[in-house]
Image 1: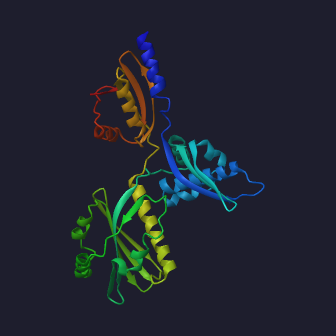
Image 2: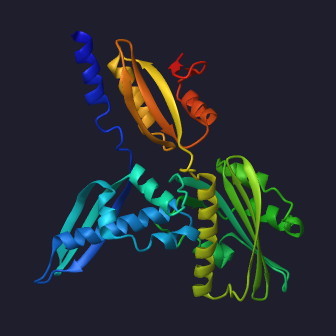
Image 3: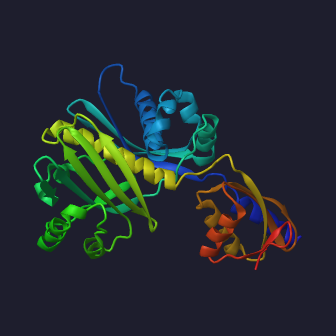
Length: 345
């Protein structure tokens, strides 16, 4: 009798919200004139749509965002797990509302998969960024605050951006290093400058300006892997503020898409894994389930069998088994994989 009670307690209390891993969008702001036909529910619905669009901008690459622009409100509301009104106020006959909205990850991923879209993990990243302009016609180099591109780079920061750019200070030593290597910047590694900022990830952007034609060489280092990305643009006037801001927007979009591609989830891969854990320690069970809940590549999991010693979990993982084992090893869990049911060592 004691075993039955313990087992059912494990089932009800440890897995009640097991599927509720969410993707949360905070601080969605909506405002509207306070008029006779004011309807608060309509404003909240507008907030739901805005929150979904924000989420799409965060986890979906630009090339696929158009596919998500006309998702019906009813479908969006059906994917919402919870929402809360963070703040509401009236100022000068204007109603202001701030919402936090949590979407069910599984439902979001199912929608994206139905549209042949692979989402990306919404991983925020600080990145060291050095933009350099070489005017080939006038044989001039523009670095740090003497460059309008540098000064405008962080002027428009969007909340859905995953990359946060750390710009260098106007250091005379760094300035002279770049000047000294100006004839060979494509091969210069910038190591002396980068190491001062204690950031593992960086982007060096070298802009070769030839009239209104621009070639951009990007040295991108994410996760200790350097990639070279060459781009070209035509008819851009870097002396025009509006065109500089558009150029910054385009470059940031390219970098965001690149980072998303590094964190893409192949949701078409749904690997079922069967894992056993001792059920005599409720705190250990809760810890294990919390870890599973917070692993973004886990699509789903549940207890599908139990006995007087073990809970048997069925885990659906968006990736190969070796990667699951690596993730769990990083969290101090190792498994005996000799049998069909993996057990914790």
